[in-house]
Length: 347
Image (cartoon, rainbow, N blue to C red; front, side):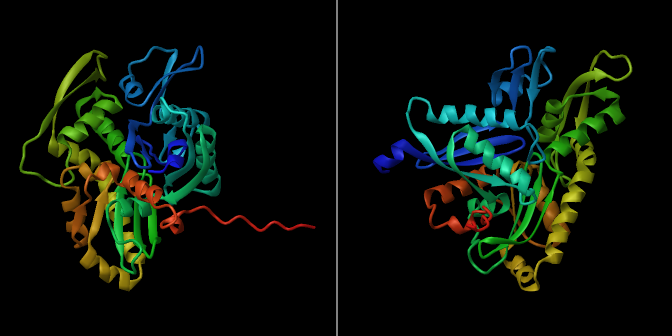
């Protein structure tokens, strides 16, 4: 590490709907926190961000709002996203005078030019001197160790909190891709609705997520799993608890899982035949938080007849891919997605 790197730092930012991760050059992943902020509406003061703010979800008085400023991979609250990132960057630079020279940000491949510009502006306003964008599936495949720069197919399925990114990657770019606004958050909503319809019990999103993690599965499993859910009785309004089994959680999220499987098939169908042939050899790689759902890889393999593998440490695939770009910036510069600016014409 040169003396220059002590004063000008490069970072990779995975600004996700559910979690935000920051990779600092020569240091690895230094921030891994929920993309949540708690705000006092009386004073407009940010009380906390990340894990501390997430603990307040559904438990706050009227004057405190717990906000998730990104929805389905898109910035829905620009100022709050900017402040969230600024708070995370403060933690990275605590005790130093270093500034951030480059920020490389992963984005879904379906963002419009306006949405891409807002991501750039957030990074610049939060403290980065320059902001670069890279498509999330490409960087996820890089983090998973796939040979993305070779003329062979790498099919990556990145199931995050707000979006599912599916892409066939060859020679450093996406040949066929699709972004689906169905992922972990939608599955949580499915469980909330199912529990209300089946048990007449009203629960919050954190409880639904607990049910998904503890007892959820994409395919039938031998293990008998059960979780106790506590909430408000829809009829009496009083507290009540019910036990929900793994097969019931699977039923609740089955529609969302079917949408993801159908989208994977669609991407395979539109890919060039030569690359589809490569997939039988290379297989499908699953990453993101959704990859941890029991039996998800088995379900995809059964439906597509293609070997499906869960990437090593799927939650940090994108951040590790950003780290490779940051550590070897010139080598991976061609992966960056910044559009070319039109030439300036002097009259």
